[in-house]
Image (cartoon, rainbow, N blue to C red):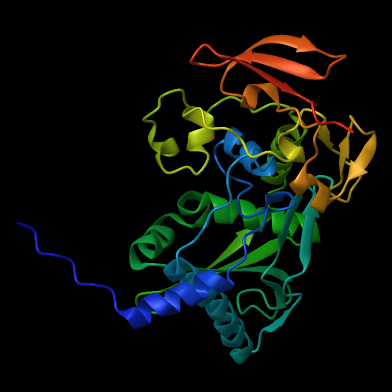
Length: 310
């Protein structure tokens, strides 16, 4: 018989609960630069279209996020301690009509390897195993999401070099890598992101195999491969379109108007699911009645329509 696990301390439980009570969940207005180099187009599309339920993090995870923020401040102090001028922290990154979004950790002058060259700063922390991989392979190969984030940051600010600075959570080892701006990489990535943003239906799956390793821990797997329903909001509606005017705007063809962030979250009674998000077979469309009819896996007929429209 396996030994019974020790009960968690009431004090620890209370601390974690306090983090959870104070936590806020929100949808990103666009594709995060930190996720932009994700391998799967479909995953980026689901996130951009707010299809998947918001993640709820355990108190321990929330505390870990805060630890990362504290470490960023410490790394800034480390750089300033050796005479580096750090500025521009949290400057906004806006690309592809402002639908690709993020903030930089900072910019710097006086980096010892090239003191007269402006650098974008990107701070990360890692456990010992991850750190070993980064040291061995470098950012591009070991951490492709970090590499994409750094490249898009340099592109957004017109900077040709970045300092990728990583601290090890286990032993405080530091790793620094200067990364050169890769215009070809950025242009290819931005073209890919623009295609994903302007695609009205989910892109192809990265794999049709339900046990494909890359999908095993994906938060979008239930809707992508298990027939889960999408969240109801403007972005999962057939009438909505992301506009490329430069401010991350969306519009509604049903009401012929721009739709604000709050309106997008709330949706409206005329919501019609993007058909490929419905876990059923589309069998009819009535444009006058504004309905789409589906045969569901159990054989029942379901009509998606504006029955409560004003």
